[in-house]
Amino acid sequence: MSYELEQQFCLDWITQDGHAEISSIRSDDPTPCADAPGLTAVDLFCGIGGFHIAAVQNGIDVTFASEIDKDAADCYEANLELKPHGDILHCKSEIPPHDILMAGFPCQPFSIMGKGNGLEDTAQGRLVFEVVEIAERLRPSAIVLENVKRFATHAQGKTMRSVIQPLERLDYDITPAILNALNFGLPQKRERTFIVALKKGAKPMPWPTPQGPPPSLSSILEEKVDARYYANPKIQADRRRDHQAKHKPAIWHENRIGLVNSHPYCCALRAGSSHNYLLVDGERRLTEREMLRLQGFPEPYMPTGRYGQTKKQAGNAVPVPVAAAVLAGVMEALK
Image 1 (cartoon, rainbow, N blue to C red):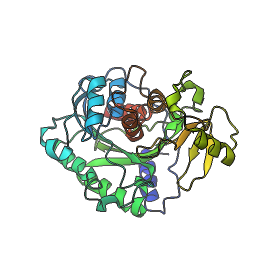
Image 2: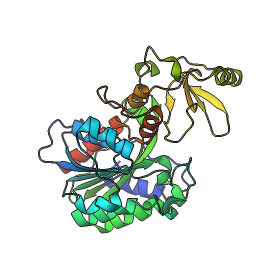
Image 3: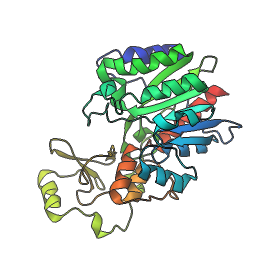
């Protein structure tokens, strides 16, 4: 499928009812570049730094970050040695010129777990337009946006088009895609919308292809887990009464209506879910390290807050291997 046809396919798709999937027919996997001379990036709505780590893996220098959540910003600074600025509304004038703008803008207004108010959510829903404003002022060579899968189909595609169209008017070529962390070396089903905008004149971007089956859950589970992570006996008994797993190890998942099911991988981590939303073999909660591993954070990366803070931060993070694969494609296009 040519780049032009693929782009048109994606744009046609977002005008439909949202039940279709974006085609997986794409160019060969790009290999992350070990040397990206002179390329810089800014990391907006940076959370705990998934995009930052992915950029560094591609040889890109991250020169500016912004995050309104102090706990997440403290964790980012402690691990990545860059202090994020605060609210994007108050620091956008300080953003330096850069080559790549990365932004995992707030997902709650577009998530199936939220109220679904989208762009009508004045507190968070319209923050993506701050990115458009920054792009208009600084004109980076590439923009990489990330959000929940539902962003692509919210309001029958009108929400996504309202972001794509002003970027097109700024002479960017736009390609959206939905990528799943399960296809990029993580045992977590986490589908996310990525939107890549490249200045006209760049080469077509080679979108990454699936990298094979995900690893076993065993690869991210800790061998020795403190008793404090175990659910109370009643919760464990209720899970066993309602469900029998076909896999071990497995992540037992309780949905919004109380139905329990299990998989040999983890369902998407969520920032605001209950502590018992996901249980390993129906018995215990994921540890902080396991949650970070599920998002592809390297072993030296250390959580800095309480359990609930790390759970929120991991639930809001972009999966590092997915972001790295997308940035590798961007790098190829910018050569």
